[in-house]
Length: 370
Image (cartoon, rainbow, N blue to C red; front, side):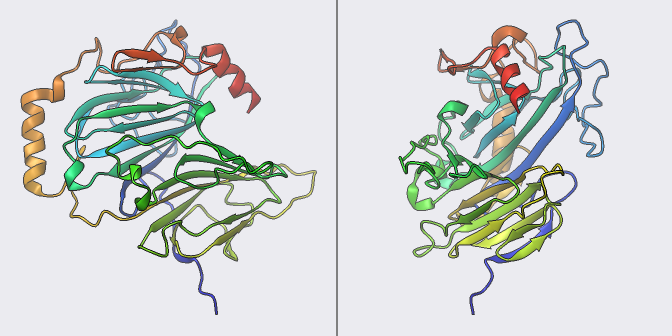
């Protein structure tokens, strides 16, 4: 008899990071409904944060921000951050001199490596309507040999992120990383995947790293294939049911009635189904995040923003940061944000690039269509 593809099922925490498996270290889902900007164009809230606002029951959180929500300058060493967006805008600045404003489906990938200081702020760019944000931040570990590589920064604009759509339109998958669902549903034309930074664990296809955002409408069905490398090595695979948990969701024949974290057997295909509904009722789509990869299988020593292999290396990281500030902070404010009309951009190694539709008007039009 075929065993279940679900190895473990646990409710998702109401607040804080979600559980992860090696090679991932951290996964958090940000969903905030910030108010319109009433600060006269400063893109700030009228009520300052307390320095550590993570209240899961509030309509929005300030996090570590004061007047602008977000995470002012802070250091990292020894891993990578992947920030994958759905709605809203994020302003990035770092000690290397790189910067950007991104969102609305863009993906930012940063290899902290030997050490970088960066800030991630959520400016209130709209004065005429609320400023919604919805995105994921992931930490992907680096093996010991790569923990002190030079920092690297990459931006993948939304129009360059592969998106699979089923022929009937009931299934949509944003392929933020991995060699999955790159064939278009209507013509089987292979889409091009964005290349992770060169020192990333995800850069080696043998590690079979994948990050997928799966959206299924009522009446939709998806067969999630087994991992590409599941026959040759152990692959860790997890799925997170993050939205639409009241839709009678079935995963591998099991009905799920709450937001859950699923550890999956990556050697098995998995069927995901969302029941149809009558046309008179309103039902949101169901959304999953999938993370997978070959484990690094090395000791993990973590303290705050540093992830190394030993406690001695953590102590060294603190000493290095205190001595060098990882290059210093070249920006005029700790919670660096850019002018409201700057639009989406990426400044990498002194060169500025933009997506094809980068203005704030383009962002507003896209949000209004959602």
